[in-house]
Image (cartoon, rainbow, N blue to C red):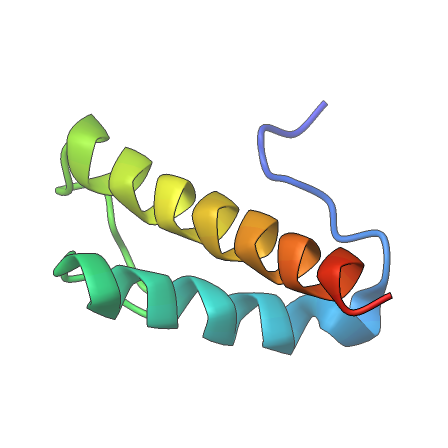
Length: 67
C-alpha cells in the first residue's frame, strides 16, 4: 500500500497541484512543484494543507450562502 494520496478523478490532478502551489505561495512555503520537498518542516507542510482546507471551507460557505 502506498503512502501517496490517490486522486479519485485523474482529470483533477493538475488542478489540485495548482491549488496546492497557490496555497503554498499564500503562506510563504517554498514548495517545489513536482520535485523534492523533504527538506520542508512539518509546520511548513501543515500550513499548506491548512490553507487548502481553509480555502475549500470558505468556498463551500460562499456556495451555500448563494442558494
